[in-house]
Length: 92
Ligand SMILES: [Zn+2]
Image (cartoon, rainbow, N blue to C red; front, side, top):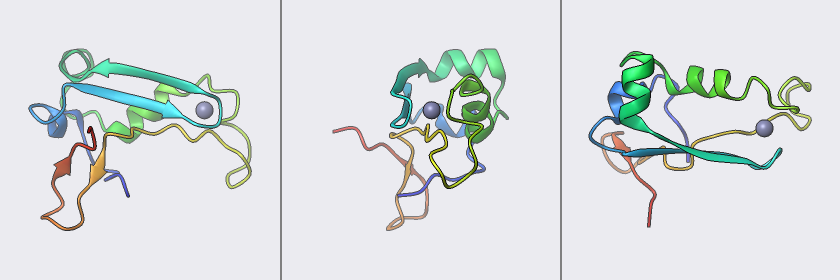
């Protein structure tokens, strides 16, 4: 499982209604409507950058990399390696 670092909000429109964010390290979890993020942040906002901003207050994020830094990620954003690399949802 991997997340495309160049993925933007524009890539999610029409494919995902809600963007879930989970951090197993600090127990953070939440969800955000993609259309509202799109309006608020613009189509070019990268998901990676957005996550970076979102977790700015995570108590673990500033720990040295590889130790136990914040692990916030979007479980719905899974790149399907078997296809052309387009976004697929992992929702059951
Ligand atoms: Zn965290």
